[in-house]
Amino acid sequence: MGERELEVATLHFFDGLTQEEIAGMLDVSRKTIVRDLDSIRKKAAELGRLPEALEAERG
Image (cartoon, rainbow, N blue to C red; front, side, top):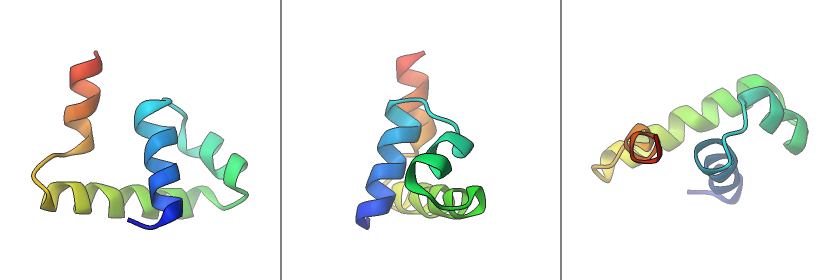
């Protein structure tokens, strides 16, 4: 993953920020964050571990 994808993943999946909050923090559009999250999910699926599984463990 790229540097921004790692930051987006951390902010969303671990810190619980919304797409809008992340977009504001990184000064990009929400659509950019949506694309980043899609890319992150695809990469995680390729590794056999979806980010949703991490959320389920926390909840």
